[in-house]
Length: 341
Ligand code: ATP
Ligand code: MG
Image (cartoon, rainbow, N blue to C red; front, side, top):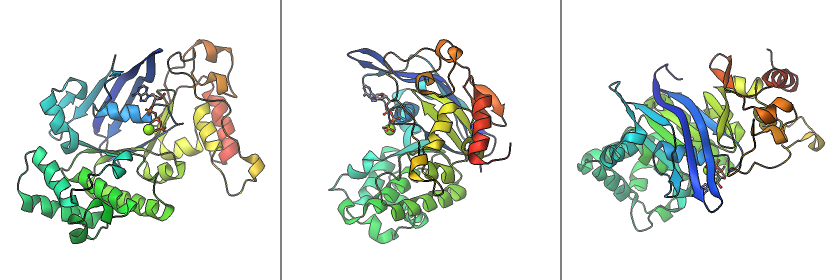
């Protein structure tokens, strides 16, 4: 579980993409803190800005992206702080991998086919000044054991000799090679079958406990988020609209959009006719709606929602939401989930 120390503090961060139609506001004025040892899951529909937010944290945004405002304050192990947005290239290179590593879903199929796994490890270590092959090998084999891979075989294998789930675990091990404080996982279980998904979740839960790093985790599968996360953030149209402890988010949500996501989960006890999905589609991010960006699709919306942007307000211990009708949502959620208030 997480300690109270903040390792990454994202403050009022925005990311725009320059497009033919104008600036597309992929992330808008987003703030959150990631604590030491905490796992934060981000959920939200396709296109809401989850990947953009995480790419921004590592400054891996594509060339047409701009960061008009915000700070990303990283706390080193010695307690000193630095704004990732202000790092020079040299510092940034050290920050990536050794402080903060990212495992992309897309990387699964982009492993260089002519490089053995061991060469990926040696190359990554060398890029960060570690040229002692024995040391790198020892660390790699230790990590393979932790992620439940046959160490010797995998170390010497070519990517095509490994299954998708094994490659995914190789990437997780590679991410941990330089002992980072933060690991960002963008849809780590999306393209794998359900048993492989199970293995990856188990592996992540056990190494996380052992190595005590923090995780930012993106998944379309809310059951994976529920199982992995300490904290859950709901993103809608580029904003984190609700953030809180996993149980509060799933049983006592305060934002209409979080509620909508929960209602869209198929329940074993429910008949097919009871299954709802959120009507309408995500808004245009070049010209986003006024007020609360969700108001057009929201069953709770009233006049104020179209006019004024709701502020993020504290609604419980470590729990905040930006919804004008948080109380009504809460009452409905208690009915729906049967949770105690
Ligand atoms: P998914 O769940 O599908 O991965 P996401 O939440 O990760 O979605 P992003 O990929 O961050 O969403 O995209 C946020 C918005 O930015 C979307 O509207 C997307 O179309 C847009 N976008 C992403 N990359 C670019 C780019 N390079 N240029 C212009 N627009 C982009
Ligand atoms: Mg994405």
